[in-house]
Each structure stands twice: as structure tokens, then as C-alpha cells.
Image 1 (cartoon, one colour):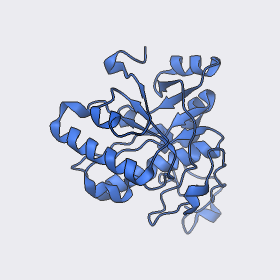
Image 2 (cartoon, one colour):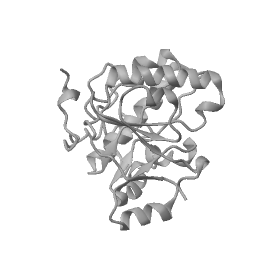
Image 3 (cartoon, rainbow, N blue to C red):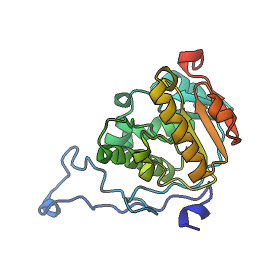
Image 4 (spheres, one colour):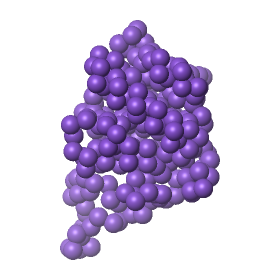
Length: 240
């Protein structure tokens, strides 16, 4: 059993190490220049894998609805309402890049709602594996950052080809609630096959307690035996 297996849903993320990204002369600076730490090295979180991908606590939160990060009105309504909602990032990457590039700024909307799925940074099958690994690292880092600030976090899982399985599931403990999106998958036979294979691999490796699905559930999911909860996307009449 790894350290990740014993992390409960309410386990706080340990305080990150700070001040790790200076330069030879930074100790003499009166103030830090803007964007001095684009890699977010000032905040490194515990990891149980060879790549240093942050390990998230096991999630047990099941939101009643998902609201897109870009919809301020829906997020404000969710924050003011009595129901349990979570912010999702199943959007074009540029629309939520701020949660990585300026994490303090990106924190506020998720904090207002109180829960969030981790960002879904894209993994394309023709993208170099080094870049895909970086996308996974960023997604888990943002999740650890949000959790460190008291926000309930559900890890979003994504993959591309079988080559990505090596790291695609890193940092997610077995038995956790996880989230995936099926939007756009079923238009392309190759994408559908890759999704189905990766979904089966996710079940095998993570044995999730529940899968939150943004979009329509495919037959492969229903037959898998793992509980699934679907949330309609705006492409099929949801999020209005």
C-alpha cells in the first residue's frame, strides 16, 4: 500500500515548499519581478511517483451539478445556493490557463463554489510524451494547490495513446471518485477506440469508487460495472 492509498478525502495537502525557484542573485532583490516563477517551483507538493507529479487525497465528493470555470454567473449562483456544485474545466485550455499561470488569481472562483474538478489540460495523441507528462503534472499541481487552500477536489483523468498510461494516472489514489469527459470523443472512430481502451485501463489501475462523466455515457462505461454519474454538457442541452 502506498502513501496515496491511505490519504482520506479530508486530508489536507501538506504545506508546499516555498522559495525554491530563485536565481544566483535573487537573494539581493528588493522584490520579485512579475512572472518570475512560470513553472510554479515555489510550491512543490508531496508525490508518490518518479516524476514528482503531486499526489492528491482520495476524493469522495459527488457534486449535484457541474459549472464551467468560464461561467461567472453560474459560479456565483452555485456559491450562493444550498446545493453542492463543483467547477469544471472541460473547456479549451486557453480559457483556464490562468489557474496555472496565475494560481492565486485562479483560486477565487473555485473557492467561492467550494469544490472543483482538476483542470483538464489537453493530451493529444500526436503530442510529444514529454509535453503530455507536463500537462498531467500541471493538472495534478493545480488540484494540490486548490486542496491546499481548502477546496474539495475531484481529480480529472485524461489520456491519449497507451504510451501515456505510464503517467496519465499518476498522483490519483485507488478508490477515489474521478472525472472524465466524453465530449467530442465519439465523432472520431480512432478517438473512440483510444478512449475506450484508456477508460478500461483507468478502471484497472485506479478502481474508482465513482466516475463523474461530463457528456453522454458510452456503452463501454455502462458495461464496466463501476458506478457512473453523468452531467450533460452544453453540447447536449446541459449547462444552461
